[in-house]
Image (cartoon, rainbow over all chains, first blue to last red; front, side):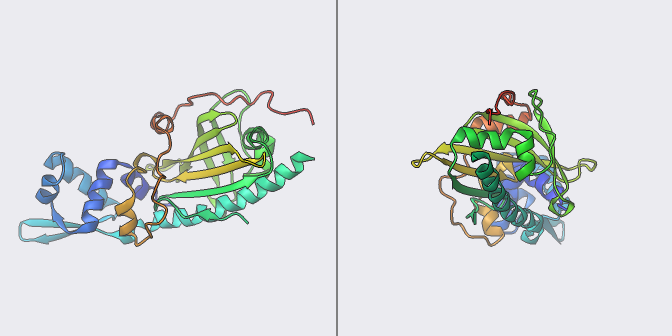
Length: 104
Length: 171
């Protein structure tokens, strides 16, 4: 079954942008805040959603927390793409057959 | 055999092919319930302009898929949502399938099917691809489903009704 969570969480452009930044390097909330135009509470909220979907790892160091992307959590997306990469060409072959029959 | 083109990004699939039939004929095959049943699957496509329908796929293909027509411009472009996940559970999202029909030089139709998984975010895929270790090939001119489709996806309302009635030509 498809894990809709990963799709839902990444469908938000802001969260996706955060995820992309964290795919480059590990960052703290204030690093992320400095690199974007959204407020710190908003950053934290998006991070929580990303963490909830397993897309971001948190590392604690004293009173600081650092975040990085967990690309392996993208597996449902990869699986989804693989499924439809087979599905649509098969359906197109059927469509061709149907069209040939309509021709007659 | 029809191959899936290099995916423009991690979250979408594109298929292109040339068909011998003219666009109006291909359009009929894409929009007439009985004909759609033959190539896509049993469906509840409506003839009276209702944009919502279901496609009943085999369980291993994902089971019943809930769809809503976003755009239907005969015989050029058909776009509908394709729900991912169990509608009973929170967190389902609508992916978007778009069929684009262009007349080709030999009098047939060039058909392009693009299935976007993350429609709202499909504009900026590069980092996501890098993160997953996928190739950057094919990034070029893609990722530009029309603004109309985009807005339609957000609203999930039909922009043009699908004129299904009267599409069947006398055989």
